[in-house]
Image 1 (cartoon, rainbow, N blue to C red):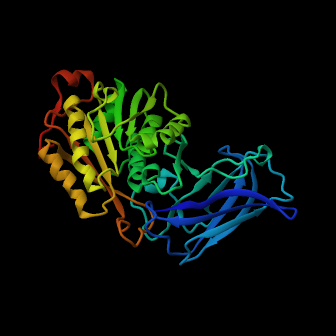
Image 2: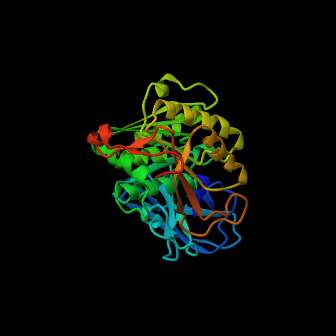
Amino acid sequence: MHYIRFLKTPKVTAAAGKITLNASITLTTDLGETFYDGDVDLAGTLRSPDRDGDIYLRRSLKWTAGMRSLPITFDLTRSEIEWPAQLHVSLKTPRGELADDFETFSGQPDHDTPAFISVWSESLNATRGNFEAARRVERRFTPLSGRSLRIWEDTGDSIARHLWDGSVALTAFIDRVIALQASAAVPPLEHALVSATFKRLNVIELGCGCGIVGIGLAQSIPDSDVLLTDLPEVQELVEKNISTANLAISSRVEFAPLDWESKLPKAVASRNFDIIVAAECIYNSDSIPPLVQTIKALVTRSPKAIVLIATKFRHDSELEFFTLAAKAGLFSSTKSTLPLPGPPGYGYADFSKEVALHILVGPNYRASFSPAFESDKALELSSGSE
């Protein structure tokens, strides 16, 4: 899976009686380690920010194997544009799939057919002096429910403030589970989601980055409370994504800073959770011990919680997480693989064609389907049993 990215966000300039919009893009894997090494036809459109808004200008773009960047230029001199407008770059050709649509993640993806996530710039408004889009871009996903999932990410060097494959794949998988279209049964997750039919579902996401997993869940499940946590540097971005979310009835999402090296803050320590999520959080071996301790503290407070660990395997040091988790009394209940659409990259950390989903539980875990089961028919799970 590859991402269409702006190297230079759109900018409107006027010179010698000519008005132009210029930008440049690239096609890379999630961490930008490798470029897409093939030919693909793209389309750039200058359009209204509305989902089904007007298209003012459109042009074909050609990415060829060996490219590292592709310039985009629109001549606006004689164009009638109703500002504000956004630049959207997406696939043009049927030879490829848009991973914007979560249907692309269903079944067994074709790793020979390229898959891309399209990109939307921030709005420009030349009539009000806004000639250059900010270095922040929007991704618009289509879950199986049809409720658009809009996520903003930064275009800079911070890996904390952009999308990772594991987060996107997990969001798409949870969407399929909710729609009863998952290809394989995942009992602990299904039990937790079923519980939302008779009580509020409480979820915490650790290292949320842009917040796509938690926001996607809150858009799909009514009566859910989702707490997104990460270091303070992501707060502005996450709160922007919360503000544009189309939440399900009576669902709430909020952000709280959380440093795994520190004691749980009151906003976290005082709450009980049904689901604990950590997507793409074990790539850094230095952060694994404090992450395990944070999860252990949360499970101690919420013994019936399940822990979702989603990771695109990048190096052997990630395995330390599962060793330390077992020593902390967190046992693997279920393991699944979430295939990624399209071919993988060809460099370091880009070879994986799938995301691993591990579900961990504590020693006192039990799942129930209804209040009656809560009292006398709970499903007991222990290490090595199902």
